[in-house]
Image (cartoon, rainbow, N blue to C red; front, side, top):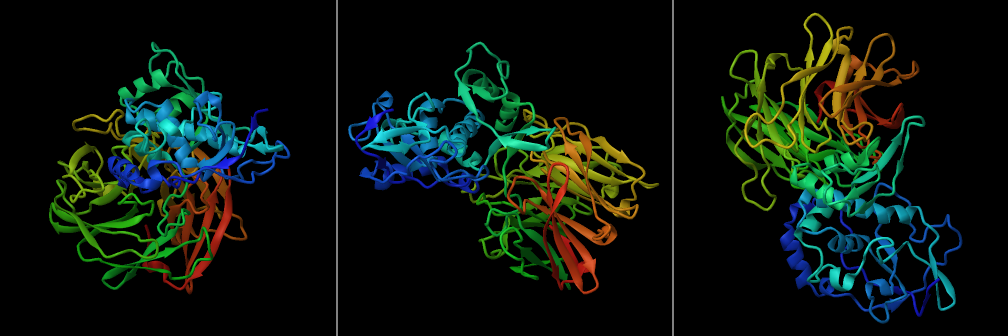
Length: 597
């Protein structure tokens, strides 16, 4: 054991921040502000503390148990291996967890690497330390006669942590790429799924230099990243999720909880537009934290005049879903409007783009998703193609958040043999798990049944049209009655790929099934749950919404079902092979006027 003169706390330098919204801040400006700030430029004075006494291996040194939300602090043993200064060496310091990870990244992941490689490294670096906080090794040292615990050591026995030269604001500290990587992946964690138990575990990650001759993915072991080959992956155009999947497979889960959070609690919310005469009025409920208030308003009305469609998406990068809608101004022209969530209500409607939509807007569908895998939400329009039986998808790329112009002009993304009049549902969803949105289309078959067709965005992304592969029928069941099938998309099993979730009526008891997404846009059909006879689901008079209501990284279902005096809203919390009952409430809003979004 090391004998140390004192146990110390370093005052927190930079609060750990969610990945949500921080991409909105230019990394260079962030660094500049940190250097300029006295609190960020140097360490605060070291003061003694009464350290927690470590009593048993099962006890946690840092009192943190969540494997979904990163810890706020970490306890580090400072040693001579990093030339810790006098008064600090051989002490235990408690530091801000974000600051710790950023400092380690500055020492171990060069900014010369491609950004996507650094993002993958950020996930591995963060989770290595996080793992040992919630799975302690019983590490202690003796300070002033007391046994004092710590989570990690500052040397390469664990991860190299030297804030005196590699800390935030130091010349050798983290730069714009590292901040961008951390902020984009801060709420992301990885797990391994075990099929026999239908459960997953938070895994210990790691990284090594690896061979300089190894090609991208050639030295993958299933648990570690390798610097040299992951750098080549980034140079080859792979996104960080693709890199993680390549090196940490099989059975990898890439978990990012909180889908469809509007209010800002990090839990997903339930939302629907209420038709009120010529207007739609937004309604939002927060079932993840508190008992929902029936009829909760969101402070925005959307006129139905010339309305093409509306969607929810995080348009400004703050982690809260905003309201976006498209209004037709001409046969091939439109205006995109956005109402930003402030955590209480939607703000006023703002014009974010206006111009030529390339495709006709009659019968068009509005989609939202990250088509460029740059952590910004883009807008897409699915419209009629050049022939009567074809469709075309155009994408308006979201510009950097600080710019005055919000979107680029529409880019041709895909066209193919899909009659727009036969499209009964359309979504932008990441089926392949590469971080890029793909196209999912539901088509009801004229003589009975339902099919799902997909077109996958190419990876790496081509510089020219088309940017998606051919559309293919990936699921078809002619036994299904289309009127008794409801569909939505989301990552229902948290494997990092979006799925299509179906509620299927008929036979007396409704079923929940999952079309599980795969690399090439195909599906594996998985039966998840059958509704009990005591509490049936009236599928014909039910509409479907989604959101990660319980903040576990899995997309949950929000059912809006008709009742004689309004609408019943209930949550089915998704598990791997079943569902769990969630919040269940009644609103007086007529079911016929509600449209989930």
